Image (cartoon, rainbow, N blue to C red; front, side):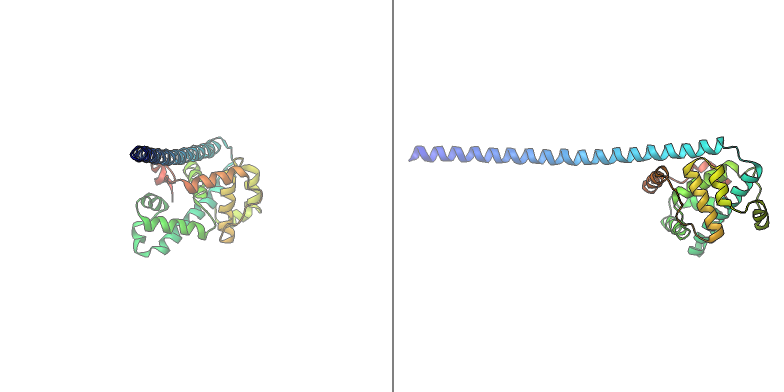
Length: 228
């Protein structure tokens, strides 16, 4: 009997050691699993950042390579300027106590990075107009590229020079992301709010998704002073 008790005691001790060992292994597996999830998330964020940068580069390259006529440049610039002004006006209306410190769109874009109220008002204003940050990025890029030489057209001039601006945009703008954002700018000015863009391609949608998940500022602060 004594021998059996000793055998059972030894067996029980062995089981306990095995259980502790299994618990340690399970704990290590959980730590490894958490590390793998964290690495996957970081890789996905990096992938999205690269995709966003690639699309941004394409927009800038397109703007530098596009050979618009003077009339086309002025016409598109006018709609971009009016749309950015609409965004600015809506933010100021939402934040009347900060209106004096937000005289331009550039001020809003600078301060929204560190001021939660301004950021929320900006996002809300874009949604009110049927826009999002991907559109704002593209419109800011256009304004920075052409604003120094473009002429602002009055309503009469626009109507005289182009009966169908949306059709003009589709004809002269090659980059899909920029084209869709300019089409929305035209809708904002002419209809008060942008709607769905017919024929919007997957590349543009992927760019929008990447922008929505990005925490980067809209545009390099070096260029913000160019904005209205």
